[in-house]
Length: 317
Ligand code: NDP
Image (cartoon, rainbow, N blue to C red; front, side, top):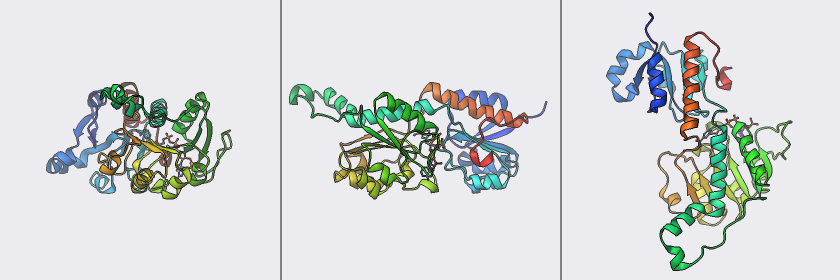
């Protein structure tokens, strides 16, 4: 009976991941943060790291783990994992694509409806008894039939397009390159796309390649009737420029699931009436988080069984 491989977790994991993980591995829960001395003693034996999409796995951590063999991320985004260091050491990184497409796309549509129809504001208005006191709310904006621009027509972007089509929306997109098989019109830059749509939905990866892709000039192009929805990563949008644009009516409104300095949300953003904010919850349902946990565990088990990984990140394929 060989000992169970040692795994370091780098974020708090839900019980439906932690419990099955413990059946197959010796789990050291965030020991590097909880007890650095104890961590130093067991670090040489750690063979795997796991955590959610927000996991910070810098080189400094990997350097302390000479026996590290795999990093398994329970999430599709892995922008805080130093993949280059992992690749240099021959350590595969895995993630959980596809199983969350529906969920993230559902939230994107929910946020579009929320910001255009002012559903959260209407809920607060009704609960506060203002309907009887002040009468009907001002009229909102129609979403069905409007023009949608998708920044990043990937797995999730395509699921958003599918749903938007059912709302009779016209769909266009941008990305680093045009996709020959995509029927939707392509614009080479976010700015050109923004100038031609009513809703701009951002669903690219985070990291250096997309930092502040949505800047003041893109918001200017989106214009005073345009809405911005970000379900990608906070880093993709210049948050300061966005706050200014919202304060000055450069755009009509924004709905954001992600922020530059999570879980901190700037007070200036929270104070605005034309925004809808959610706490990075696009994949946060029991069903989808379970599917993500199952896939993250399956990748770890496949690795230690000497089998093919189910979902390595593109850099490790
Ligand atoms: P994919 O890799 O399938 O799609 C990403 C898309 O972004 C591609 O179409 C790609 O097109 C485009 N893209 C990449 N880099 C750039 C760039 N520099 N400029 C413009 N477009 C770019 O990923 P998924 O659809 O599976 O996931 C997308 C992201 O969504 C994740 O990486 C994650 O950050 C975020 N996410 C957020 C969640 C939340 O809770 N809010 C939950 C799940 C995911 P091209 O290659 O042509 O540029």
